[in-house]
Amino acid sequence: MASATLQGYLDCSATTPLAPEVASAMAAVQASAWANPSSLHGPGLAAAETLERSRQRLAEALGCSGQLCFTSGGTESIHLALLGAAAHLWDGTGSAPRCLISAVEHPATTAAAERLGDLGWQISRVPVNREGLLELDQLETLLKPPTRLVSLIWGQSEVGSLMPLAAIAQRCQQAGVLLHVDAVQVLGQLPFDFDALGVDLMSLAAHKLRGPRGIGLLLARAGVPLKPLFGGGGQEGGWRSGTEPVALAAGFAEAVERRLALLEAAPRAMAGLRDGLLTSLLEQPGLALVGPDPRRSPSDRLPHHISLLVSGQDGRPLPGRALVKQLSKEGYAISSGSACQSHGDGRSPVLSAMGYDPLTAASGIRITLGDWHRPDDLLALPEVLSRAIRVSRPELR
Ligand SMILES: Cc1ncc(COP(=O)(O)O)c(C=O)c1O
Image (cartoon, rainbow, N blue to C red; front, side, top):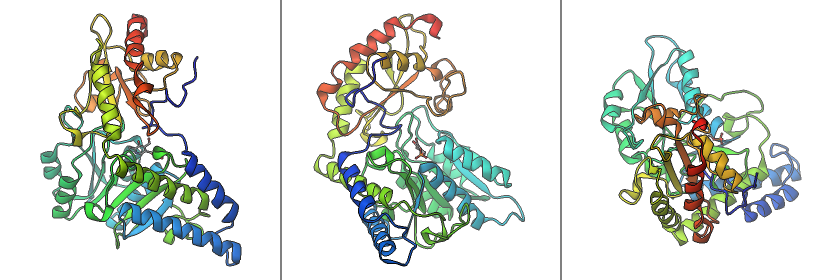
């Protein structure tokens, strides 16, 4: 099997390779600020100063004047947000409150919501339309009592839809309901100002934007109370115990600043590259766009993201997984829509929630670009994909 080069790596929604500048920044911090930031001696104080500097850099880059809590990644941030906020919202007595999530959340949010369900919360899912966009009128209806907490994905990882966050935040504020947003896919793709968004809590991870694996962030509006998930040394303002990874935090800050500088210099670069590739892909038989069409409504889709439904020469859906394997032999790394959350038969819960039938819901593939890609890297892909469709055998269904 050919292993994908960086040019053939088209799975940036799964993770991204560390940027060289980020690796250098981390190595420098690891060499100079390796001590425990809680120690009172000189090396400890140096580590604490470096850690707080990274936090400050992130606060400025993301427009957050509240609290920034480092975690191990997106999954932990989401659990801290939901379980930590819920513990303050309800003490388990009296009638059960409700938590809303969407029908197309990442499994981390679904799992955290299930934990709330075990604690007695009612959980409801807000439906999405055929494009994977949240049904706002349904949200409005569901925001009535006993809803106390809402957790929604902003940029959907599988089908690229960008939820209308301003309208969502406004409705949650009007209803007096706490809003947590999973922005793991959005960070590095769109600039944003946390304070101006009107959300209460936001989960982020460094590894989707060429930062290190193993570090995430929970941003919190000033004054939002949270109960920690576990106890210990009381680091991170008491929200997340454990000796802080100073070099990872510096890598996170470097990665965010690096990406935001690239976005500022060329705001449409990624979307332009994506749109060119999408047009060429849709000229091939057997490929259809799923999720919002960015050429019609660019603000409804993540700029690096393409998701497609694949059908064979007989017009019947082909399993996305078969295509992923076939492309891997050709040196391309893409993903089937359902990589993280398959039912076992390859059927994607996200495509099912968007109203696709079971066979079609197993036929999704996802192509997500990185900031190193250039048009030449993508020229051969439509033909390679088309060939893969032609050789995909019926028994792979
Ligand atoms: C939208 C979304 N939320 C949460 C996560 C979980 O983040 P992590 O893998 O850093 O725990 C991911 C990762 O794929 C994601 O895409």
